[in-house]
Length: 446
Image (cartoon, rainbow, N blue to C red; front, top):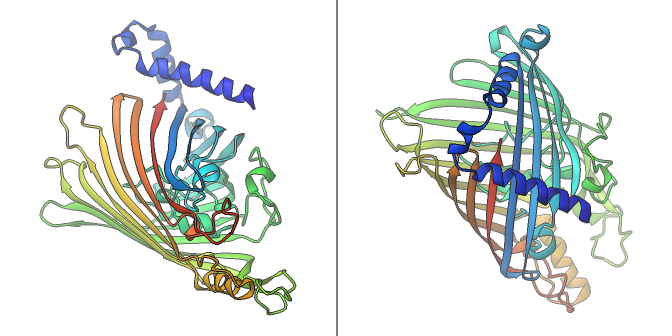
């Protein structure tokens, strides 16, 4: 572990030095190195390197106060197979993660919607490995291989600035689906079909393997540490959506509304009852959960540019909102909503700087809350009844120079764990306290 961290810090220091080097030095680099990359791109080979490093602290509340450093190195390649081997309309993509450091939510806050989208157990892991084939002049695209769902499904183009994990892949799917669904840090094998039905309407349909690790695994990241299980025999997960693009007003402000649903064909544990029909809190119950066949969810996404920073600009003030529901009896979270505002193009001196404000709300299901009341009844103690978890985030992303971003962030975490009992409370009757997270994210791309 020490060796991994040492190597990671060495890589981070080297990349940071490159990113912070005076712009004038770029002119001193041999033209051959610059030309080589351009020649490779022209030949169909693209390579990417992104390093995200975070120093985050829980300054009050949560399970305990403290600070962590975590980082993720993302190495990727995209190959135009038409240019390389003459395979018309085909693209190959692969990328891997090297994740290191601790997790603030895991070790200090205790919340469901992780304070950072890169928080994960330390690992070197293959993430995506897929081929996409375009057909009908690009109107139809079929992608096959290990892939993630969070880039295209239940997504808004205005939420990528935010640090909290739920403001990327929605909290309800990240919490309810096995292994969190196909999203960082674990993708799964699947097939995705994207069809451009018109200039305004695009349809998406995907079939994924139902879990990134064996269903009985205590932790999917431990069971699939390197992303190489390539599971294809689990009951599948289907997801589909329709995206409609339109424009509003004389300024022709772009907007998008998306609606869809998902259906999981695995069995899911009841949140309250055991296999013998008694409450799981009842000492006389078997202690084995009642299993419910299948699971599903409905969702919608709305996003709109509210005002332009300048006539004809795509920058300005933007808004997004997402909402989703799932059955109460087999899910910890039954309703979810998030939304926020993104401000871009407001500074002539720093045209690529961005400022964002967003919030999330995840409602603990009625069935899970009923279980907490049963625990109160059978133990005779004021055991906390979970109700919701909510996050408020404010962040500012400053472009120090092209390829290097510096991003302070603030989060208020209300009712961590949905208002769960504090594991450090000896009486097991007190909730985890609301937490406050402050920190800085750096993003370096090359």
